[in-house]
Image 1 (cartoon, rainbow, N blue to C red):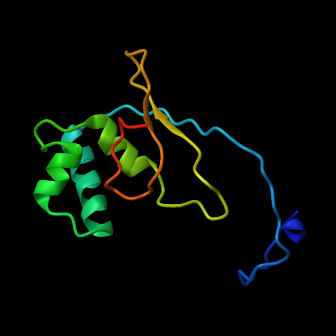
Image 2 (cartoon, rainbow, N blue to C red):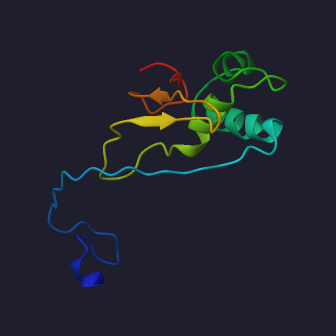
Image 3 (cartoon, rainbow, N blue to C red):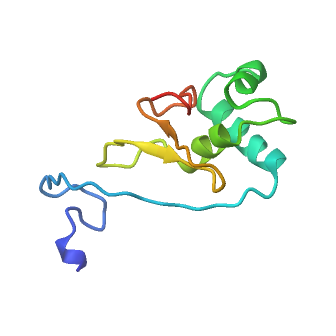
Length: 115
């Protein structure tokens, strides 16, 4: 199986493999601590850009009233998956019928509710 990979063990690229397959990835979580969630999201944003605390509060809300959806999107989405293009992202609370979607930019300044 490993001999079929498009790179070798040293990480050197092999022949270009082009695939246009699309996949959905699903992850279900329960938020146990909104404060911990907010702190982790704030640290992620501040480590990837020159955001101030005020910018963080504007993006994900204050620690005492965080935007859970924004925090989850910031933490759950990788900056980039090598060899892939992010096509769509959706987040839905278990008790609500609506989806929160995000498209476009990969940085922390993306607003979750916009599509």
